[in-house]
Image 1 (cartoon, rainbow, N blue to C red):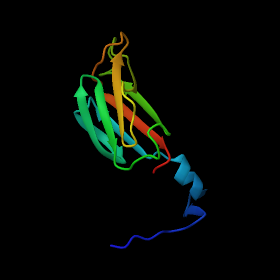
Image 2: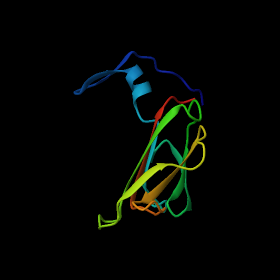
Image 3: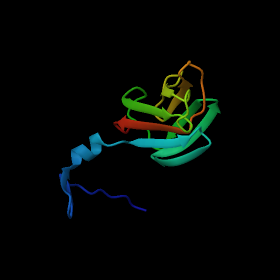
Image 4: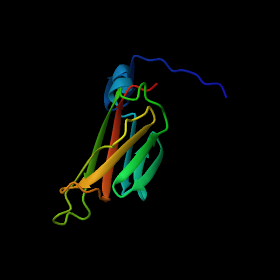
Length: 129
């Protein structure tokens, strides 16, 4: 199957106006995943897989490589399980250096211990390879 290109300076929606293509290329998420303690995925984009490495420890594999292992921004957020007291969680980049396709991330409780969380979201922005 031959691949082709579509070249345009702007994209226009029939009712919502237009946007510059450079904004679309540079300003949108390249990958994201929303998961439940690594056991199930609520939704994703640009995702190849999610690995549960243990309690509160996950590896998100992107289906397209980023331009460099440290040339992208990752945002990781997490929510507790049902909003009960003591379920406050925070999330961040894992204990290893990211690669162009894999971002390790973790979730911890307010005491610093790793825990599984009902809602964890990873958002990747930056340049694709």
